[in-house]
Image (cartoon, rainbow, N blue to C red; front, side):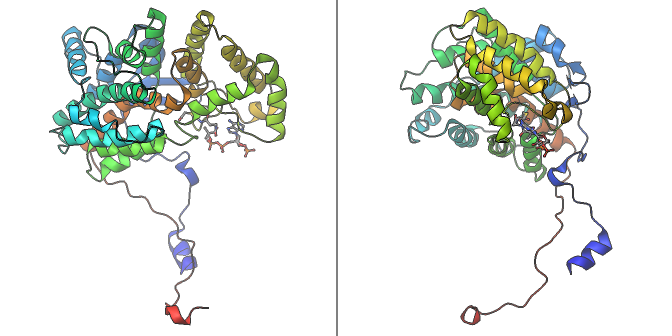
Length: 388
Ligand code: CMC
């Protein structure tokens, strides 16, 4: 039967869907050859230099940068959603102390739906509201999960701070420096959307069944968790920590090459040049490192990058640092422990996921590809007692 099916349809299997276009989108353009990224036509370099995460979220959700009135409105609505339902806050204490943070987040984002009166409503207006609730909610949840894990008192959200600054305030329980607040905002802007990456595609597949935004984003969190996607940031930081000192970079790199290990934070399915986000985050990390008592992590990363980029193996395969390479250092210098890095990614990407759910629902078609069957030919069922 296999041969017959194959002959009749001559299907071509593209593993990992590499290079396959499965939809159109107006949300972001990833120009992998030139190392550029645009959100709805705006270069991320300009957005990062001049804008805020709130503006970026508005751009992703509404398709346009907000005017002053719209900006004030979105900021106020995001602030309102910083406060989580009391019963959900009680639930946060119920998971075992050592629960992996992204596992906890996946659970609580799903649970948040239970307190959202519009959770089951897939209309555009309801989804815009849910996007805001999720974007603020994930930041408050992350800060609270950290405070519980480290047995520190919860910190109430502030109404006078922007999204990035308020998050750092709730996480650490003190005002961040202006440089840290700006680095956090940059990080959020740069991670906000990135075409049909694995977690976004997962969100869209889920949304395409006409499931709701919370389900789509819970599913996206599951896809993000893996070390080939959102887990790479933590893996990159742990790799720098394993190297330990700038002097050890060269021997470590030589051994890694001998053992054919992957350098975490390097390589990308779409970028065949320097990831534009990595360039910006590198400078943010450099600035934070200069003010830090631990500048060695930046030195290690930069030295490893230089070794990799000058090595024929990486040159031939066009492998360059991706967003997670220097993203890891930025969040390290912001005082975030590595086990939270995947959620830091989600803290920003939630805006993109929500935009994609809205776009999917606006012109839905069930995403249902096919797999080429290569299993056994049809065969008769053998009763249990007759099987050898
Ligand atoms: N270190 C060493 N070799 C590598 C690396 C790396 N980081 N990345 C790719 N290669 C090699 C790979 O072994 C293969 O070599 P060969 O042709 O001899 O078999 C070649 O480059 C192509 O690799 P691939 O795995 O076929 O490429 P891909 O498009 O499937 O993988 C990737 C992309 C990001 C999964 C991969 O580069 C990788 O594993 N990087 C490390 C993990 C990482 O940093 N992930 C974050 C991705 S960016 C953020 C995000 O989207 O979440």
